[in-house]
Image 1 (cartoon, rainbow, N blue to C red):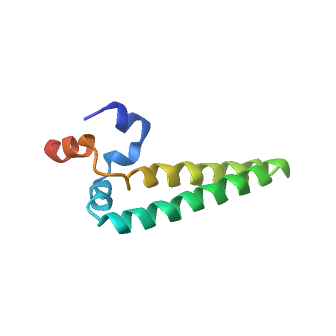
Image 2 (cartoon, helix red, strand yellow):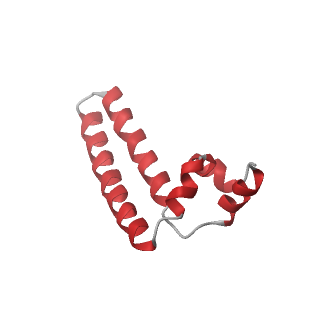
Length: 89
């Protein structure tokens, strides 16, 4: 099923997304904090690589940052879109 949420966050299409959302709130909060720190570090590293004209490395780190934020958004309280994905299987 294709929803606005799955278009903006393709991670919602993965079965593992449901596993993350079944974690206890404390575990989700800890995972989210780590992922957001990871994202910040990757963005900074990507910017530094871009300034050094290391474009492939910069792109790599920028992509990692995007994945980190997509996964961190799975740590929110379960969304209805994930429930719809469960019903579709």
